[in-house]
Image 1 (spheres, rainbow, N blue to C red):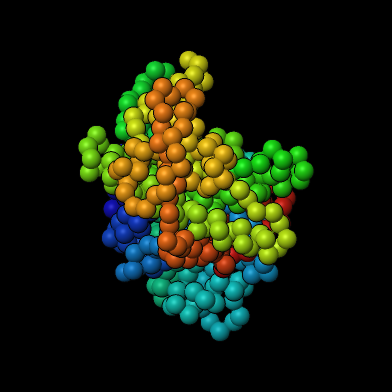
Image 2 (cartoon, helix red, strand yellow):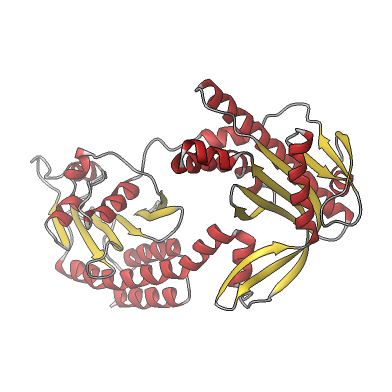
Length: 433
């Protein structure tokens, strides 16, 4: 049968490391090409990712598939989910549920009424766990608009292929897990280097980059006066406001160090590339200052203290690679230039300014800078001329708009998978459409 070839394609795609979205879309298109009368397919599955808890896809015949990523966010209890087929499956420990959608009778589940309006005549929902007694798995549904609904042969084919789909999805998700984790915890460039094989202790490379060191002031006092949770919440607000700008225009945050972080803008060893890197770094600093200004104004209006911070700017060569124990390493940057940018950042306390840049950085960056003098930096042989930028205004409308565009609602897939995670633990069920 042609559908058997679809199963073979699934296994080959999974072994080849095909992206899960391509697997899902290709699977649905091949099923219809093989003669199965599908008009709509929905699939949601849980994933292990520091930023997202699940992913979901919906395919419609002739329209292709749409996808959603599920953030780690809570949602209130919804009566709509309690009246959904998925809730029924989980509460009754069932694997499948089939309902014909015909006649004028009120639908058993509200979603069936919506599907009826789309011309769907037959609906099969399913739950497929990846492991016994695990919340990791996939859930979804098959729908057809065929007047007579699904044939017994079509149902048998779908049940058989569902197992192969679960295997393919799990393999694809696991294949992306390492990339997800490394990108989030190490940064995109460091993660790429580790995945490409730079994994041995001592594997290093020297690169040239514009360097940005950012540090929050008085963090110890905040922790002592207000407690751990207030300190953590304040630190995260600080990072949200100022760090996001350094993910744009070629910047990478290499590491968070306590209450600060180091960002780099790699460049080639020539004037043009160095100029571009330094200017991009300064643009991100300006955007970060604007966002911190907005945050502090809001905090002051709420009767909270202003978050103080300092930023150091430099350009130079840094060593990029693995250090540590043979069986416990970190991917980091180090070298004289990193030490220098740290010293520059610490000088912002002395000069009561937010930003200090080195002579080298200013020379490549250009723009308006006010000289602060010449300083002897600890561990640096030659005295360094230091400057602070003179910005005409602080605003970054695109960044502010992007930062404020929080999601007000969650997708069907998000609600579904949040409930799926909570079901095993006896937590409140989450809403789904």
